[in-house]
Structure formats: C-alpha cells, structure tokens
Length: 121
View 1 (cartoon, helix red, strand yellow):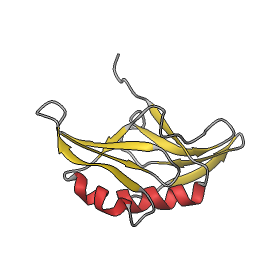
View 2 (tube, helix red, strand yellow):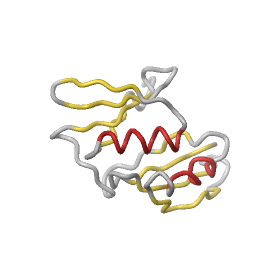
View 3 (cartoon, one colour):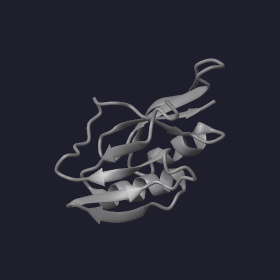
C-alpha cells in the first residue's frame, strides 16, 4: 500500500462558519465547490492523495465521537491551538509530547462539534 489515507472529509453543519474557523486557525485558503448537492471546502496540499475537505451534505453529520483525524500541526502546535478559542472552537488537549515516535499532539473541538487532533513529529 502506497498511502494509507487518500482523502479526508470533515463533516460540517454550517459551511461558512467551518471554512472561516479552519482558514483562521491554519492560516490557509480553502477552495470551495458544490457537487451532487454537497458543499466542499478543500484544504490546500501539494499532494492530491494527502488532503481532504470540509463537507456539508445530508450524508455528513459532525460528531465528537467518530474517527479522530490528526492534521499537520506545523513546527509548533501551540501556534494553531492558541487560535482555536478566538475562532470559536475549544482546546480539549493541550500540546503534549508522546515520545520520539509520535512526537507532539494536541486536540480541539471545532465549531461544528468534531474532535480534531494535531500532530508534529
């Protein structure tokens, strides 16, 4: 297997609010489009097989109890974690070192109620 993950979809209930939240904390521009009645906000990435999108559709329901994905936290997770509250989310796990293999992790709840992790090795 070349890649474990090809595409990630983060469910949202309020598309504009979610785009604003992630754009703010990650300091990125999210491109949007609609397809088959679903709204997509695609995360920028150099590798099309290592990216994903915010998605609003009848099949996507935000939840803090589903699969947890870990986004690239950059060189210092605190840069992102320090923006979460002001952007409308909640930090639920401060930056912590889990050892050489896992590196640093942190976790937050986004504006839609999803639990999202951050990681830096």
